[in-house]
Image 1: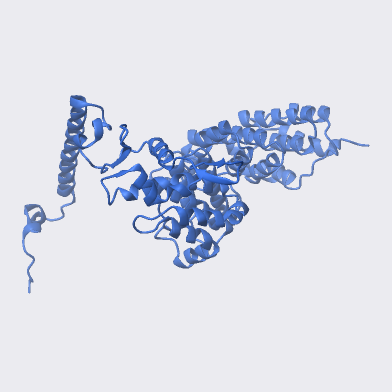
Image 2: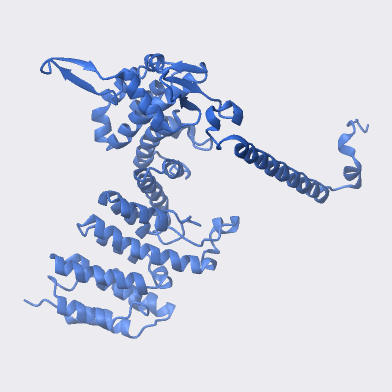
Length: 481
């Protein structure tokens, strides 16, 4: 069997060996070869692949080397073969040049799709993160390259644009389910602000979908790390682009955003004011059960947890089908904290027993149930004790549980002075706390004074007429007629 069609590989390698190529030759010679490329090997052949990889310099002909690395990934079937493929991808990440990918952006999409099918999600995420970090570093080093992007003119200077590698890296990170990878991707890939979509994500018709996927997957990565604010912002960006139709990505993001917003803030999230009302109604119609859950979890006044917990229980099949059980469990755990804080709007203090009764804490899963008499009858464990442990774990300065045996919960206004707090809990004790408050007040006064001076300078600068400067603003306007 002829494992290696030399003419096919020779045509690619011979062009690569003449690198660096001019822009015209890249477009007329190399790109047509890559557009009609078919892997010339029927099965993995380490000798032939190593020979071809060795003849191509990734710094001089990034596109040709990228195609050879993709062939390695496509053909690998064993651990040893996967090792060779990974080495090729890592060398591409280390030596590949961004400006050459710009000549044929489809190669980045081809690379992301191929590595994403490698089978080992953790390895795929690591390889794509290597490539993404290299591209980000090169974009940041040359921000002028994004001068044509409108966002660049708004003052952003990172120079980083979205690529298919970003998106697939985030997706593989979610599938890998490894905290270390989540931290790396969140800080080094997703945490870098984008200047614009650019042209590295395919044709203009695909850029909107690419941005939606990137924002959606970014929110999932941040949510897995417990970074709720970053996740909510990422999911908020899903609704930033104008669209003619409602996408499945927007519906999925709305569902996850609703659960996380309820857990973080205890309220139903609002759509951006610029988002089309007809699309908002359509999304809420597709996520009707999540809308109903938000309404149950955000009742006016002080109510029991039981209806909200029952609603979550009734939605188990829907939550499981949407793969939102993790967020649902997080919501169930965080929900009592919001009900407890609502009590502080009415009461200044409550006994733990009374507070547990008001919010129906006995229905919460944290209140364990132990069997009695061989498991036939059951009785709840101390509800007050479970609630006391929960309040201590909240670590909320506005909800303070007395350390004495009285088990009284005191609700402290958020803007209360130090003397109103038990034992000066927020800033320390005694004179040290008062000094901190005094320094903070002095700093705010200095900031306000500087702002007033700046506003006066702007006022003088913006004045258009001598009458405006003299004081016409303080005169009563009269009809000149």
